[in-house]
Image 1 (cartoon, rainbow, N blue to C red):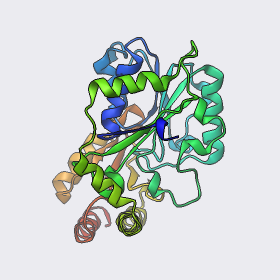
Image 2 (cartoon, rainbow, N blue to C red):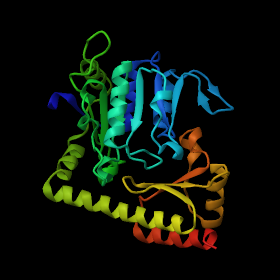
Image 3 (cartoon, rainbow, N blue to C red):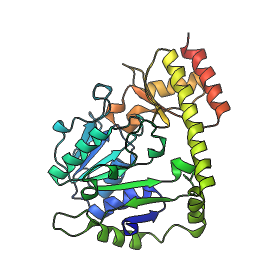
Length: 310
């Protein structure tokens, strides 16, 4: 219902507020690799314990390995019970998109363990293969899931700031009280509301003309992705993502991702994102973004082929 939807200044801000809602004693599981805000917000809240310098993992976080060997979806049989599960789908950085069956398994897992899934749907609008675009398409999700999303990747609102988080009334704490009620208290205490100007922009996005324009932008970035994927594939690299998401995940097996980042920067004058910045399982990869104009993407491809296409 409308009472389950909370308009905000974006998912990133809401993720931090969620840690305030659940507190420092909350146990947490994250995909590895994953968007850094989940771990970093948990660190700031004091929920993670100390960092193991050898593994680059925090003591009190359960890292759900998302590797090429498991199709970038975690083996839930190896994941321990936690209070919260942060899950981004389609995934940033790998671009992997979970199937309906995988999401059902995730929801069933959370319900068995009494966990709450924080489902980040930031890139759902990029899904093109029929996979669910909302966790609430999955049976039982309204009893164990919070879903957050925004206009940042839909309509270029990254700096404008407008998003929403859905907290179903059916979602309860272990004592039976509704999470929705406490989330409302957090939001009304820590946030004064998205401005009327920004909300007017959001409303314009969901008119017929606005939605068509928004989908046109999405299609443009997906075409960029196709060009980037084809470039790295033709040059013989391991390539993942870039179909249901605006990111291409490129493997440089056996090489530290920061070394690859530095080499591409030095030799091509291009900025990629080192995979290890998203967690230990991102080592050996770099993330390449499709967010750019076509001429810049085509120029980047030419530079990459000059260096790596020989």
